[in-house]
Image 1 (spheres, one colour):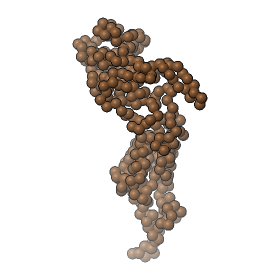
Image 2 (cartoon, rainbow over the protein chains, first blue to last red):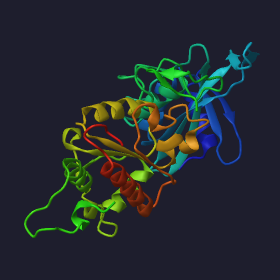
Image 3 (tube, rainbow over the protein chains, first blue to last red):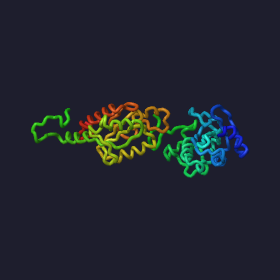
Length: 175
Length: 164
């Protein structure tokens, strides 16, 4: 069993350029890493003795909404710049320790490496994050919408500047 | 108006009635519902079908084929993705066909009316509803009342026009 600080130090030693930051916030410290190296780091965390993270408990997307907020003529807000983030909650059943990883990718081109090849359950989690936030998971085998209709063209509903359309296939949407 | 079987027989062997009454009685007494549920309302609908409330005493049994179903109970939240499928199911049903909209979600979008980007705000936006049953979810008694209202409506139908 390792503490999160120990895990961060080992990761920093192994991937000095890709492991960026350790936020020692209460309850759940977070390790920020490079979105294009998350697959390498996860592979390491799963396979190396002493870590053995055999379970991806949850993979979730977040819109940090920290870009420039532009108010349009019709009163709605559009966000330019800033980042979207993905959080990974890992757990080792064997060693009973946990770690939280975070990657941040630019709002305009949110490319993140897929961890589907490491934990199969990430397949649908990543599809959901793509559906709701528009993350592009590189090397995902089947990246398409999972909850919204396949022909949904109005964008990604959980983004803070999302605008719902008036109609879908001729059906009025607003109340 | 008394239903057909409640009317006294003038002769022990012959029942005299109108074709309208006979057809309506047959229709309203064996409303086969499309075996189809959506959300928590579907749990109440299943409870209504089970032995305690016994939907079958009104002739309602689930029929898992739209081709041979008479009634579709929209029991739950209708997402936009599901709405297109429900429309197709409804179009596959043979006339005469009836719709009971069960619960707030199906009636008007319910708790999703304002922020539900994915929810259809009322099933009547895509298919014509005969009876609305309010509730979130409605108790089985409420659904039974809805069915009785629908039977009342069918009893007044005529071959000349659908609803008198």
